[in-house]
Image (tube, rainbow, N blue to C red; front, side, top):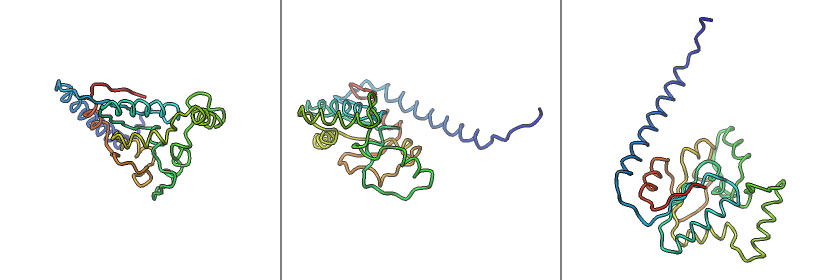
Length: 194
């Protein structure tokens, strides 16, 4: 009844995380105080499903083709789509386990609905090809040509055991935390979460 569990390490970590979040909020509030907005679309890509990534890149390439500056922020499951199928990095045993469980690259993504044991993505890709719709990989290439910026969440990479060495080659690829992307998004005319 009088036993006490030592939680000093956990409390210190929570305190450090809370401090970091407070700093992020302060940065976001300072950015919101500025009435300046840019003709920019900021997309937060959380989902790692093929259909939602197609939607994200349709919006990104459409906006960029209209002259709008586009910034995409890939976080959590969305980061798996940006893994290079051939990318390799030295990892801990636990990080390798996470890597085995997550799709490696855009060609191995599931559908959010009707995945049908993995046959759903094959069917959607077949239908897209037969109807003359660009594949996700073609849209990603077009996005690069149009100057769409892709930012990968460094915290998500750390949590999911991903390294920069295993990410795709993309000309406008960057790495940042939530606070930096919130700063970008705060001056955007439109911000969407997918």
